[in-house]
Image 1 (cartoon, each protein chain N blue to C red):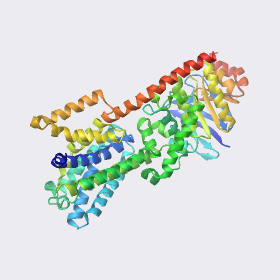
Image 2 (cartoon, chains in turn orange, purple):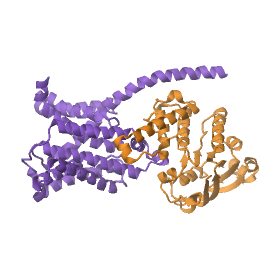
Image 3 (cartoon, rainbow over the protein chains, first blue to last red):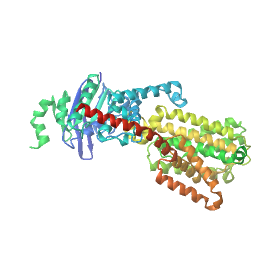
Image 4 (tube, rainbow over the protein chains, first blue to last red):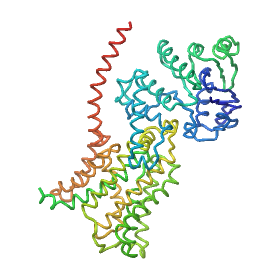
Length: 251
Length: 299
C-alpha cells in the first residue's frame, strides 16, 4: 500500500503562478482524476511529482518519505512511473525494446555480471524479453514486436508508452492525458485497463480534459484552475459545482 | 594468400589499433555523450606505458595494464565536469582536452621527451596481442550491450527525459561510459606505444580524433560491427587510393560525404537495420492482415 501526498505545492515561473498551493493524495488501489481547463497547471503538477521540475515551495512525499528534492531518476526508482502528454518513445528502438526498458528499475544484474556477460545477467535479459512479450500480448501488440516504435501509428504509440510505464510495476502511475486524440470506444477500452491496474493495487493519477472519461473512471476528482484547486469530490459532485462550471464554460 | 597477408600485415595491425580507438569513441557516443576525448585517453595510456616501461623498467605487460588504468582514471576525471554539459558543449570541452593533452606532451619535456617523444621503444606487441585485445574488448562490449547497461545507454542516447522517468541515472551511466572509453583508449594507446617503436605528441592530435570519429560515422554508432567496417574503410581506402598520391585524402573525404548523405546511420548499422526490417516487414504484413480480419469479424 502506498500513498502519494502533495502538501501545499507551489511552482512559480517568474511572475506566473503555474501551481499555487495544491494539496492532494493518491492512494494505491484507486484512480484519482485531476481535471481543469487548458493552462490550469495539470502537466506542471505531473512534472513536479516526477521530479522533472523543482518545487518553489511545499512538499511531496511517498509513504512519508519526502521525494520532492530528488532528481527524476530517483523518483522513478522509488516506483513513480509516468506517461508524457506528447508521447515520448525511444524512436529507433523496437516496440519490444521500448517495453523492456520499462523493467529497468526492477533489474538486479550486478555491474560485473553485466560487463562480463555472466549467466545471471544473460538469464535476466532473456526473462525480461519474455515478460515484455507477455505484456505485448496483453495489449494486443504482439505483431509489432520488432517494428521501430517511431514508425507506429499514434494510437499504437500511446499503447507502447502505457506498456512501458506499466512494465516498471510502479506504486504510483501518473498518466498525462492518456486518451487525448482517441475516440470514445478506444478511451473506454483503455479506461478498463487503468481500472484493473488500480484493482491490482496501483495508485493511478489521471490528468485529463475528457470529463466523461474521468467521471466513468475516477473515484475522486480534483479540479484545477489557474494553478489552484477549486473543487474536489466524486465526479458527479464536481460536475455540478458552480465554480467548476464557471471555469470550464465561463460565467 | 599468406604472402598477401604478410605483405599487408602492418596495414592489418593499424586496422586493429584504429578499431580499438574507435570502440573507445563509440561507447561514449552510444550512451549519448558527444565526447571526442578518446585521443586524449590514448595519448595518456601511450605515454604512461612508455614512461613506465622505458624509464622505470616496468615489465611490458604491467605497463600496458597501467596504461589502460591511467586512461580509465582520466575518463573518470573527465566525466565529473562534463556531467553538467550536453551535446556540442561536450564536444568543445573534450576537443580542448585533446589539445591540452598534446600541448602538455610537447612541453613537459623531461617526462614526455617533448616534440621528439619516446624513441627506440623495444617492439613487444604484434598482431596476435592486438587481436587478443580486440576480442577481449569486443566480448565485454557485446555482453554490456545486451545487459541493463546497454539498455540504459540506448535509452539515454535517444531521450534523456524518458530515460530518467524510467530510473536510468544519466550521471552514473555517463560516468561509466567515460571510464570504459578511457580504459579502452588507454589500453590501445599503450599497445600502440609497445607496437610502433616510437610515439610523439602530434599523432594523438586533431588528425587522430578525426579518423576515429570518421570510423564511427562511416560504420555506425550502435552496433559492434560499425567500428569494424568504419576502421577498415579509414585504413584501407588511403592504401587503395595510393596511385592518387597526395590527392588520396580526397577519396576519403568524398566517401565520408556520400555516406553521411545516403547512409547517415553508418554503413554497418544501415545494413543491419535493413536486414531486420525485411524480417519485420513480413511479420507486420501478417499483423495487418490479422487486424483487418479481426475487426471485420467483430463488426
